[in-house]
Length: 372
Ligand SMILES: C[S@@+](CC[C@H](N)C(=O)[O-])C[C@H]1O[C@@H](n2cnc3c(N)ncnc32)[C@H](O)[C@@H]1O
Figure (cartoon, protein in one colour):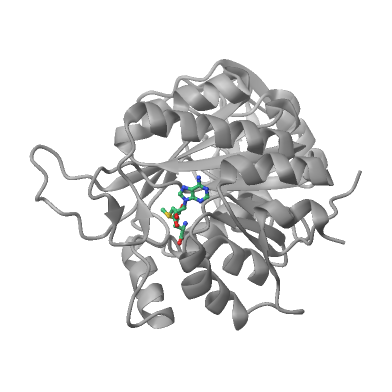
């Protein structure tokens, strides 16, 4: 069954009610990425700056997250994932609900996002500088690796790795470039602090390469079989000098696996809440949406967890950061937001200048099934 409703739509309603309707309308099993950025339950005020309610009890918040996760699970495709953003106070609750709904086996991990460049030290005990993205796969075993960008070429990856199992690797003649003087190097100890390495037989270096087999016993990052496969594919190995420490010189261009630490300190493209606030002031100078996520964060999430053409779902759309970025990145999208004023004042104006095709309709949850 294919989804009857329009994709690239904003749906006004409570996500708990809209999600089962979407499933009934044929969206079950079609969504590649669901991003959830619910109110963090900060208890700060009844209606936080007039935009949304953020003072649920712990139990109410847990029930909201559970219901939304149940609805999302139904809509995800087998290789889809949900990314749930929260702060430290509700991280434990969020993970309990995630484990309950998706099962611990489908828990992929938690990304720590450094959310600010300018932490506030007004808190009683501890300044908070991080948010968390909990990730679950509908079926973790079917989930592709999350990658972003491409590996650099020319990067040296040392074969020796402290603490790994010692194995014998026999580099065939000409497989290794050598930066030291030509000559015969006698079998013997090539250890250095932390790396227990041994040259198993004499080796002759000529014209900057080994011309006889180079047999090394060392704690290795790679299995001998992987090294032989890399050599067979023309992989470049280099030893600068004695003691012999071969490095693999990466060709580059391979998809780069992401880590679970996302920080502007490590990655110049990683944006923070300050960037989100600047983007809001540009879009809505008189009333920026509070704590809208920066577009760069959504760009990274969408890049890692979906491909062009996939359906991206946001159940707590707020100012519409996810649909705006998904549209730029050639994804189809659905955004749910319960507050009609937020849709009117933020999401629609934000998307108006960006959408490629027709203006997208705002759909009321109870009208969904009557769509053509
Ligand atoms: C933290 S904001 C999301 C901000 C958004 N990520 C952005 O970048 O602008 C949370 C939003 O969820 C909406 N919301 C809260 N409960 C909801 C529910 N049950 N269903 C749909 N939307 C809800 C609120 O009205 C609010 O706009």
